[in-house]
Amino acid sequence: MADPLHHPTSLSALEKIFSNNTYVAIDFSAAWCGPCKTISPIFVQLAKKHGVESTLAFAKIDVDEAKDVAQKYQISAMPTFMFFKEGKQVAVNGNTMIRGADVKSLTAASEKLGGLAQKKKAGV
Amino acid sequence: MHSKLVIIGSGPAGHTAAIYAARADLKPVLYEGFLALGIAAGGQLTTTDEVENFPGFTSIRGSELMDNMRAQSEACGAEIVSQTVGKVDLAQRPFKFWLHPMGDEETLEEETHTADSIIIATGAKARRLYLPGEDKFWGNGVSACAVCDGSLPIFREKPLVVIGGGDSAVEEAVYLTKKAAKVTVLVRRDQLRAGKSNARRLANNPKVEILYNTSPVEIKGDEGPRGLMKSLLIKNVKTGKEEEIPANGLFYAVGHEPATHLFKDKLKMDEDGYLITTPGTTETNIPGVFAAGDVQDKKYRQAVTSAGSGCMAALEAEKFLAEQEDVDVPNGIEGETDVRKGKPETNGDVPEYRQNPLL
Image 1 (cartoon, rainbow over the protein chains, first blue to last red):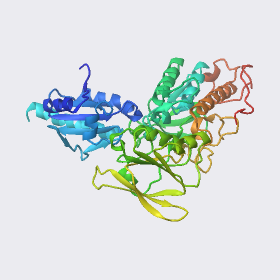
Image 2 (image 1 turned 45 degrees about the horizontal axis):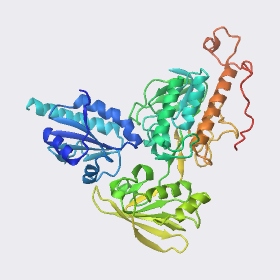
Image 3 (image 1 turned 180 degrees about the vertical axis):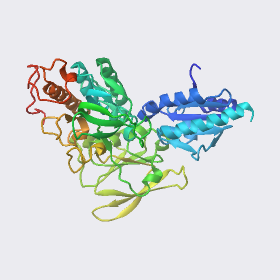
Image 4 (image 1 turned 135 degrees about the vertical axis):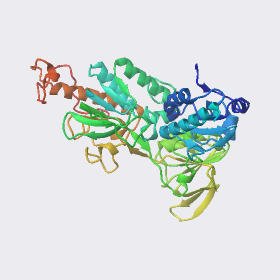
């Protein structure tokens, strides 16, 4: 996997990812955000570990580049992590989103989604 | 792991100390912290957009300046560990400390690390006021960093409020006018503490309104998990009159808290928690423990003064370590199991700092 992350820069690009993947985990970040940079390599690692072709995609969205997406989801602090099933936002482990660079919650959420994706792929 | 010199902190003080210590062959290990206190490695400058007063750099993004410092520390030979120090024991030398696992600030790793000398450069963090409504709207309008959050879509062309009267408040307010419809500055007293040219720039800005003798009372907004801040209840502290002003963003610029919780009851600190150092030096009350940067400076708090004190700390640590070595021992410091005071000067070139000309 060259780059385990998608980098949509518009709502239409994101819609494509939604239609091609059952589950999507998104990292809303900004180039000038320190904690975003710190947690970024961890998000990449989680994507490599838990990503499943067509079933679970990990995407990183720069809120300055994809202003329409940031506006739609009312991103108010970076980083913010959101999770989607079939294009609709869902709660994972009881959180509709993770606000801030919370490694523990992000890892747990990615593991949970990874498990669900594996099951889906296996047709269970 | 045992090190001759450990540096805790990764701002300008920490990295300048690392550069000097590495070049003095002290093989320093710098613990940059993993989101310690919620701030990325590099410290407060990573939350600053444009730095225009660091000599040698007309204008540079804060995070870029810190990336440069980090790269230089590594290139000089400093070892950088991306973990947060969770506990220290300074009762005797070698000093002991324990790390948090990466991303976990609740548990401590088992391994006990030791150091012959420590430079504390853990810096400070912006203060919050904990007003009613603050927790609810944190991230949904309330922030302590105008540069980090000021460009967000929820603040574009909206009325914003900055609380504070110092240079930081003024600079943040001016920064926010670029994107906001209006910026109201709430100053607790009847005048700004900020420098004259900064204060003038603020007062002359057409988008700015300064309210003196005014304090915030409560943050209000829409209900629900994504409810955004809509207004701010304010009070004139002299007349007692309260009013509610429309505001979609509130930015704190009310001072800093030094990151010294690790050293509570272990090192001398003042009533605000800043580490006390012997004037003109970076020495704390424990020989071998030095403090540099904002953690021991509530007066200047600039990147360049922190860098300067980081250099002082490294030079003082070098001298301290040299004084601990008994040069007659065949294997040097490794051959000794107890620390004895050796010759006071092993290298006649080590400069003596009796008085800091800047203070």
